[in-house]
Image 1: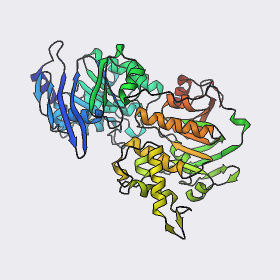
Image 2: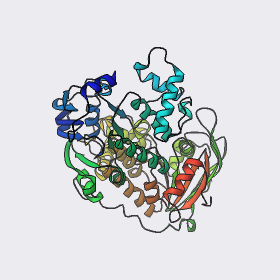
Image 3: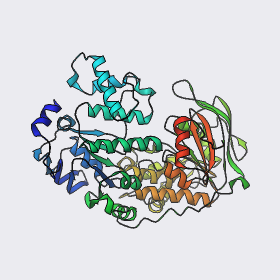
Image 4: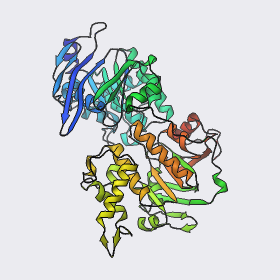
Length: 524
């Protein structure tokens, strides 16, 4: 039992870290993921862990959670050297991890998910006792969480609370949170931060893995930055600045995205996309998009905000020809393309960045240049009479890798070996180098990317805007939506519940619309 082991170890003495990682090194084939890393966690603190994709921060936390075994180094928990061979070992020591992708069974209730995660409740649990215990724990953090609710019916914020309950019920007091705000509205984010501060007041310790520097500065007590497998900065948060942290993360000064102030006069230009009374069926056989109307003009970025699962994905799939509408119309430059094939839409100037780039945007087993060929192989000058000109394909692939800063040793390497940020750069480079788009439909183009990759993608979107391309951009990051968009559409329950200009929009107003479907005084 976790409680018994923790009682034997006892609390860490004053000023002694709860966790000490000293000289931790981890190698994978061809990669030194952690290079002699030191990391400490004290009682009653939020410790922010920052770094680009591939910096080694997730590997370090996976070592602490028992997923990986270090090749060298020592880990002490409450002063005692330990060997973590599995997450079970970590949990017995009071260490728990909430992953970015929730590990929940949506068809089961909250209590059932907790039970399946904890073998200390017996073969036949007393459900009423378990549910009462969970209600008390939830109430102590001011969560309105019903233990009998089906997880699939919960909001992302409530699902995150279930993940935390799974750890708390087992006595965890060292919590590792991986990008916890990536799917939350501003209201849910504030609630999470309030919960985190309550937890550290109780003596718990929290490691916050995040790429949002403003969040790290607002909620953490200490901050550590990793780059290329090593710790390059660690200090009290009160002594750190955004410029210092961003420079430490990438090894160079990150310039601003350069977004011009003021809303675009897009309505003075021609529409490149018109969606008229569009309704689309979801995978579960119910309407996911309900009578949506929107317009994207030349030279504007129209942002679509909303909590995941409110019809955004089905909307862009219908626009991109991947899902047939039930009713309504889609027009590109005035031409009715409702139900047209992706190939036809591509030839009309639509470029599509899918929401899960690694899953839908590449063939991982193929090389980089073969993934470029997927897009261009039908067309001159890359093929003639059905025969692919591989020399031209490889030439454009080299240009994609160079111009879009894809970190790859060769265009012949497997696309599946790239990091998430480099996959996104490859897809953007392939789509934009080999075409002249009039409309870019980009679903979560920076999701999961590090600061340098995010900055690069934003600059690409702004360049397209300047070149008179219309951009329809889905994002769950309100800071990104407010930074890049000329106008913002908010979706809730499959409907558009508000359309606002950037100058009128605030995170609070957008958050209310996203979480409640109420326009909060903003005209739609």
